[in-house]
Length: 100
Image (cartoon, rainbow, N blue to C red; front, side, top):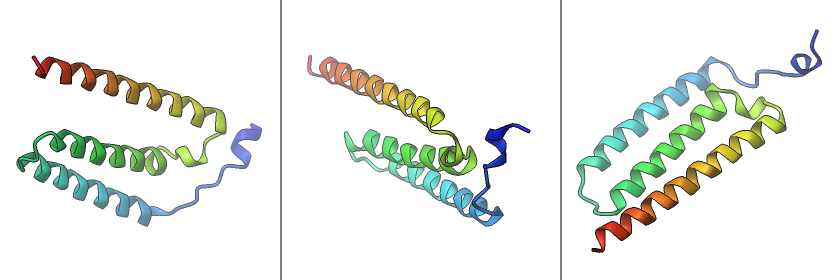
């Protein structure tokens, strides 16, 4: 038997899955509501914030990232860091295009 699989325990039952699923549905409704409200430049920021919260819930609960080895968590963190850098560069370029 592999030594990595012997010490992994599932820390939660089915109720947490239902709770997180309901939270994801509510956050999706909030995203749709925010998209319908004219908040100006904050609309995109609010949508990205809600999407970040939803992705955190999916990564930690459904994908069991909290139970993975530290090396795997580092790889996921580096990928998220590059996504944040890409978003920053995209929106900084987009803001310069609108200034013309």
